[in-house]
Amino acid sequence: MLSSKFLNSEEMQKLDIKHGLEGRGAIMFIFEYLVDRRNGLGSYISVPSLARSMGKNKKFLLDIINNYGLFCSPKDTDIFYSPYLRTTIGLSEHPSEEEINDCAKGWKTLKKEGHKTMKKTQKSCKKNQKSSNKVATFSKKVAKITPQLTENQHSHYIEDKDRDRDIKKDKRNSSSTTTNSQKDDVIANVNSSFDSIKKSFADADWVKSISGVTALDLTDRTVADACMEWFGMQCKAKGKTFDTDENARWYFCNLLQQGRKTREAFDEYYKQYKYDEMVRKTAMECCEDDYYDYKESGRRYDSHHQIIPPDAPRQIDPNTIWSWIKLEFIPVGDFKMDPEMAARSKYYDEYKRTHNKQ
Image (cartoon, rainbow, N blue to C red; front, side, top):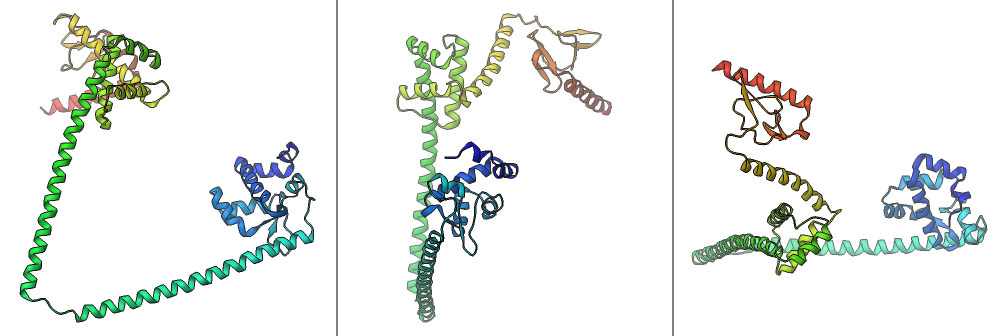
């Protein structure tokens, strides 16, 4: 609908400077409104509702209609139109007096009908208000003349009230018992879900197909164990349960599909899992005295000849280094020199202060 000549016109450039793409979007919105109007003539009466439809305020829309030369408005009328749009839909650039009068008459008729409807609504509201006031007055009078209850009636009322209270207590107790049993059921179902996916890994064909879908080598024992452990944690966190093994398999595949946030979460989890597994294997392969930290002149050092606290655990992996921030051994690639040295200074300041007191 919009030609390049119109889009690159001086008026549109001015609009772009102030409102950018929002201004262009508003132009399209107004044009859609005008196309549906007789002879492409719109009314300022419609501007507030148009603005609400766009999620903008009235001032924004009026600024675009009035201040950039893209729309025109005949004197002493509430009509506006776009010369460009009129020529596009096969009309003259500017409307004739007859077209303007027809449009103005139509809007006046709508205004009159709107006023009539509003008056009828106001009258019905007043009638409803009067009737409600009468009911309220009557109820007050009834309350004043209500006789006092006898002693027998009063005690009977209390008995009924106590009975209701006991019933409510029983309901609460039964609901809490139901809630606890539901929690137990959820835990049992989560465990069964984990067992279900663990059984699925015994199916070699399924493992092969799911490896292709997720781009994970699930035939690798470490990857498979990490997946099952992470899947069990996800099910427990979300209270997820499954009626069949097939549903558990589908959910497992869905969580680990590439591009999903859950897959990104698993990738981060697997990095730590793989590192922990490597440390466990190293510790098992090494004998008890085969550590990589050492002592010299009464001080302890790690395998990178960095001093470590006297109470630090033994270093079982040569590819780690002592972190003064985390106070544990971390992978060498995670060590950041400046913050670590700052943390080391703080540690020894606190160490000296504590031991000097003693």
